[in-house]
Amino acid sequence: MKLPQRLILISLIFFQAISSSSAQINGWELMKEIIKISANASKLSDNCFQLTEDRPWAGGSIYYPNKIDLNKNFKVEMDVFLGCKDGEGADGMVFVFSPKMALGKEGGGIGYEAVSPSIGIEIDTWQNEENNDPYQDHLAILQNGVVNHRNGLTKAISFKRNIEDCEEHTVIISWNALDKRLEVFFDGQYMAGIEKDIVQDIFQGDGEVFWGVTASTGGQFNQQKVCFDKINFKPGSALLTSTFKKIELDLLDNKTVALTQVEFKDQTPILEDISTRELDELAALLEEQPDMHLGIMGHVETDGTASKRLSKKRAKAIADYLIEKGIDKKRLNATGFGNRYTGVGEYPNEERIEIYLFRPLP
Ligand SMILES: [Ca+2]
Ligand SMILES: [Ca+2]
Image (cartoon, rainbow, N blue to C red; front, top):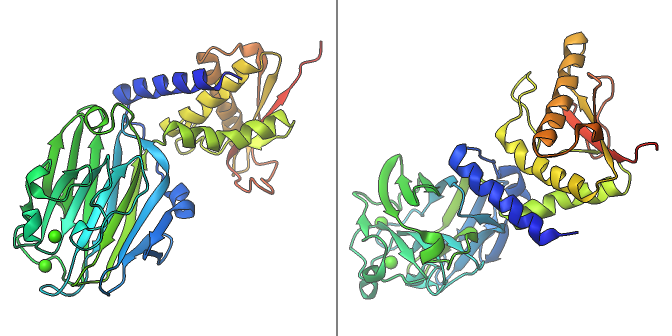
């Protein structure tokens, strides 16, 4: 198997995809399972995490443990809770992109200091004069684990009010890979932005990084929490390969499997953009197995002739996509079953595309 070439090919396809469409993947379902927690952080619910308790000298971080690719767009919407103490509260939190899942220094370091290479979006609730912090709670885009505002990518931007107010605040972080623009919004207001080739300038050309949030307390302290509302990104190639890996192994083991990432627009055979990465992997597998044919079976939820037709059209849409990717149509056998068969075991979804490999009779 020529895996490296395949990865390069897939990267190229994705690189082209960003310029032509706004395809997005909601990483949320994946994230619920596999967030990585370090030090004093803890999980509060499926989408909420406590980063620090309300006690001195605590530090905590959470990271999504599969790299994302900054050559593609990334957007996260989260609610941050910075505590209930203003004058006596500290220190804040930092949203981080870095090839390491690291927790930096506590206190004024906000769990970010010394995490390098990195981009950090700091929400700072304590004035450290040694870091040129303004008196007010503030926000800034920082680089390479340096918390001194003299070296920031933006200056420190003060909030017009106290943000350690026992309330949740919405933070949106948006990276546009094409314009190379990183923007931060707080409670619906634009706060800061940079235009920078982060992949080249910070990460030496390798756009695959982890993302996470760090926080700390010091002599002063607050409880600090983060909840994620929406996360949109395309996974890096490592995740891409690992999600398809199981499907590939099962197929080669003569099993029938349901595709996990293929989605259609409601009641139509039109593929959602999200589907392409799994189908591209499937096309690559078929290229590696030139003697094998592929059975494609469409299943839908509802009863009736129209449903049977829809399930067949959907199976055919998969075949058409693979043909477009260079797979000989003689190798593809698409059928639709309406709702005749219920999904079982690992594939309880009624709406699904199942596939299997078979060797044609001579
Ligand atoms: Ca404050
Ligand atoms: Ca500070």
